[in-house]
Length: 338
Image (cartoon, rainbow, N blue to C red; front, top):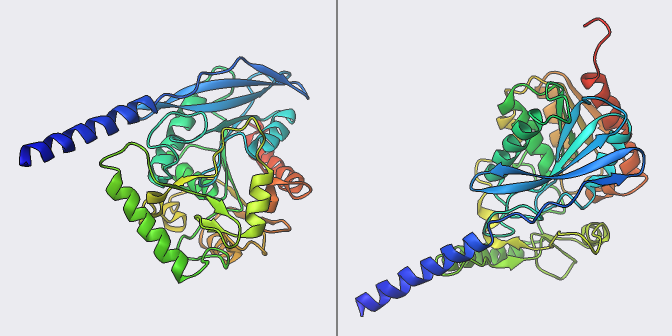
């Protein structure tokens, strides 16, 4: 009996490992694409751990060796949702942009799929920075970071770790994980269900490569990591039919954020920072933005209207892009006295 159990256990682990390997490859890269405004978008792959991550490099045709901004999304977002608008906006103004998918998401490889691990995502940021810094299409000595939501917190930490980026833009950023927004806690029953589902996902991960998936964002009355009608409407409205985004998250993701807090972990950051935030943000509290701006030098705060997810739609997106571009160009363009 014991031998049978051992055999079943070994077989289940082998099946899980096999399934993980099958899901580990990034999607094939597409051919370069010419976009409006004199931009070429290159679909690239770069090494991330044991797999590859996918990135789009937007390059202005009329600028030789342009500066470049590395851009990352929040939580379970993918490069094809909301971010192309900002990348194209920067590129048309002469700043190349590199937008990438984290491991386990979108066109990138990695398994288990849809697992949000901030520490692994920070490793992906480091890999993306290293890749872009050495790319022949851009000037890797003039590099900035831009992150949105959770990606805003990642950008701050990644810049502090790297120590050699010229500027950082954090949009509607998650800065202090100990300060929760008013819309981030639907109630004790939701929390109990979330934790039980996460434990179930962990328990079953030994027997299957497929994680237990729950919605990343659900409408009121539903169940997911975020439960909010306005957030669901805004986020789902951004997704195109060709997108690789999935509104699903591995339930165990809830346990990966232990000790993660940009307020502390970006303490070594010396590069100039622009925080683009809304006082009405119900998910990433503005109070944390104010606290960060007071605690660290060379931090500028630019306010926008609307709630957390409004920043991806016009007219708020346009305002945020203009603020970010002005800041990026001021720190990335060559100085006449240099």
